[in-house]
Length: 344
Image 1 (cartoon, rainbow, N blue to C red):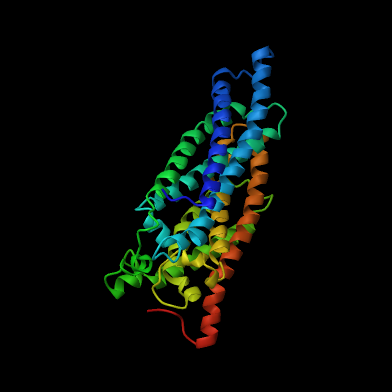
Image 2: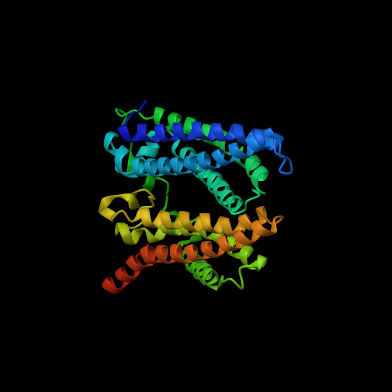
């Protein structure tokens, strides 16, 4: 087992968060079974008090897991590779995990998405004195504890596979995935130029639609649906285009398709604003797409959900602008400096 103080901090934060989720999960189970908002007996009053406490604990658990996720990302990108022979970035760390890195990140993302959606619905519920969404939120929250258990187990299993005395071939993993130059210049058989064009087009559309969303247009369900769907489509296109093409303007070398090297100091830690903007766009797009649909049976909560969609649209604008600046500015600067684009 690979132990590091930063890893211990991650596991500790996840463990405390899991304990909080278990406590909230028990209350959520009781609420799902016994919640009767029209009653005023002792059990209902006790459930209401427990639901208030569960709301506080659930929010604390969300922030703990978010903190643990940031620490984990920082550790993989900038810290753990120093203890693994042959590793120069997070790619080497994930390789040392013997295939567990992708699952580790996936479970963390799923857990954060579930907790974030619950957190948003909990805020909508707390806007109203009658707490009309309590029962629905309790049922939804029951998804979180099992995912948190799997996340903690996956974290332990992934790092248990690391042997500091076993060397890895970090860069070879990046370059050996392309047997020919033609494959390095395309993604799933589609040339890089088409991916860049699709990325620019989707970015302009998402940016334009997010600006268009105003108090008078946010009620348009089709507009919200299209914007949320485009955000979900934009995420994989932007990620693939960044890693396979636009990252070359940060690395100043062709076909180094490594997502983790963007986090290194020699590349100005540009991965943090880039992937942070992607995460912001993904979560806010999901909020616009899903949140009003989850509370559409409650008119008062639905109104608050539309207000939240307005704020989400503003954040989409900010996130898209940040991402475009950090991806396109180096490419434009390269073109102005050398008169050509970086391409194979």
